[in-house]
Image (cartoon, each protein chain N blue to C red):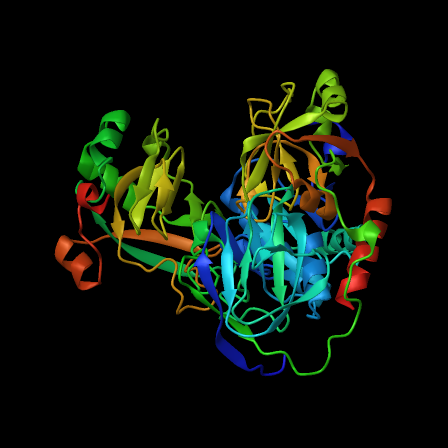
Length: 317
Length: 242
């Protein structure tokens, strides 16, 4: 990336809310050090927010979980918000999502609480500015890595957020996402699962249950993983020798309730797995509120890969 | 798990859209490491910049690649090709050798007495038993830079605590089952604490931050309180350290 001019104080945090984190694509090439990947829990919405703000792939955005965040701009900014509808307003007026808008100096951008989905992504043209740690600014609180301070801190009241000043050229690309790209996260999603090696170790009844149940999202859900409640799944293996875990891995501890592992999961683990959710299904699950229902469907890698490649091609080129 | 061709080793298992789990062994064994580290090195050169991550562990290597630039089928072929030619790294691997100065004392290793009782040894024998063996790093995980090492002397075998501690101080040296570890950062933890090392296990000044890597050899060297403090060790007792 070319040298960019940093604007030290572009946005002031009036109220930090429960959880707002700086996230770029994540930390890669470091999992063998026990360092997790981090990055946006909903890659899909994060990619749209950046694209609509006119940013290149990989630019750091804010992931706002649940709402409560209030920000005041200290200059005119081009921004886009995608993902969850958290009842965002600009000086009290509802903010349109999934499109580029101007946030004028002095205006207060306030996120309320979930209307649809759980995590909203705020991208500022130019991108948020922070010093990478192990190659990334992705915030992982548990590991004390990344974020604006480099030590994994979430936003706090009174923080002043730096951005890179845009290059001055008008942003290219579309300024509004087409209707079919905007997700309504209130719908109960069907999540694609690529079966893994231990799937044959689950009993026949449990395999039937796994793919024919509306699973309920537990309130024990965070960026490490999402627990699903439903019939108790039984596996002939109780535990494995610990091994690496992929994004979206669906592990089943002895209590029989599956846990889908997301971006901040531990790098290795030892529970048998049904398989792994596709990247876009992991993104979709990250938008589910506790109590929401989801279904699992087994898929081969062919069509899932095709779909994922099509998605990325629109953003990554 | 034996007698069925589908379970023959090594084998590749699907690990999502962007990964293959290479299962090389069934059991934890120090002799696994030179094979796993050799395969990891070969994957690095064969995959080049299409490689995203390699996660070696006790019996496996998870290979993560960019599925846009390489299909799972192509990745599988690459790995299979490497396995056919695979030779173990020489002399148990190319890992580094580390000596971790360790202050074994109940003030910083509050489970010394419990371990002695459980194993039927004296505290001095526990310390001697733990510090007289060279361990190998099987895997990193749980927290950044946290190295699972082993195998400890069978006489030291000890279950985890029933209730994990909320906060284990940085540098704490611990055992559980037949493994040992040193805590690189203050985290919750359920292992038995024997002492504390002054070695900086996770250091932002170091390339890659983590002192230990899979395949490395590690010795815990018993040092006096004075020597421990001279090397920058923190003797704050457990109670005060939280």
